Image (cartoon, rainbow, N blue to C red; front, side):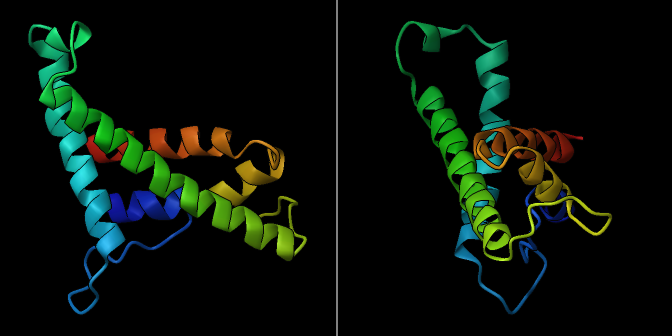
Length: 126
């Protein structure tokens, strides 16, 4: 599922299912997603000690979110640079979803990052 969501949200192919390709960034992304979903349940359903002091579960959760954000922003910035180099910041019917968002908000890649992360995490959770 993550592979298809990454194609839609980030306009990339992760290669999760490729046997011959070792993708360290892909593995880091998979680990971050697993950590996120494992820890969000603990943080939401158990006594919220993390609100009083930084627990190991909270630190792992923050690591996962930071990792997801960093990888997402890396791909968004790369796509934005590629679009600017091609001078193609206009929407058309062949543009990917990420390209359309960046065309509407070229000065705010964080907006695209928020949308991509929402799609990515909700898509995997579903």
